[in-house]
Length: 260
Image (cartoon, rainbow, N blue to C red; front, side, top):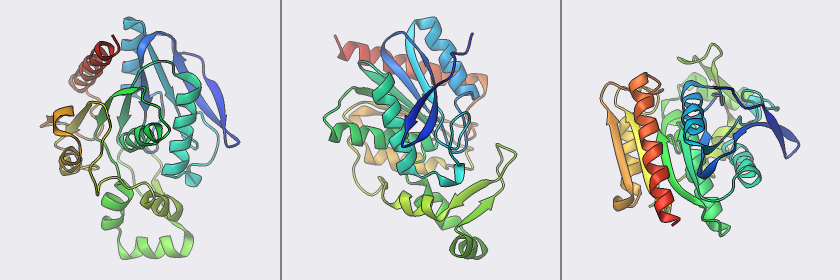
């Protein structure tokens, strides 16, 4: 598959890298995870599938990620949410399925909230992979050591080694404080569209108990949870990719039926 040429969208003075494939609606929009980029295994597999289906597919890098401008340490959930909404507004037409991985699941859920608030109802389905809404408050803060709390107070950030990339993860005071302004897991979440969650039970980054808590906040008749007993956080093995593509295919078909 030929990867689409990168384009850039200016959002608040930062160049946000976008790759888009034209095709039929409902389109699919990919939202990556924390410190991930749009050329990862799952995004590339979905792009190839979308090409074969003649379906529109859109992906971008948040500021400080991949090919986008900006500094990673300047990022917050609100900032990355604004960028994602800007890309959605600029490059999508007709009904859409949002596919969010890890932090991208939080971004996707917040996008739906903000779009509905603005009277925009084109999101017709969500596929969330190891979704991590509220991860700053529910997963990062409770696990912080005294030393990390001291570093956060004194220098405004702390670092932890990553199992997935060479560089450590950086968690800033701004990220954690802004995360509190975007919390979702304390009240029912009405997405006004079906949701399919894929979750590995061997995930050490976002435990499956987090997905179960999220399911409990979503309308019961509109949510599907697929637990992968031997799956890790990435869910990037061939069998995991097959499950992801199947979930997105079914969601797109359901959205198509809603649109007729």
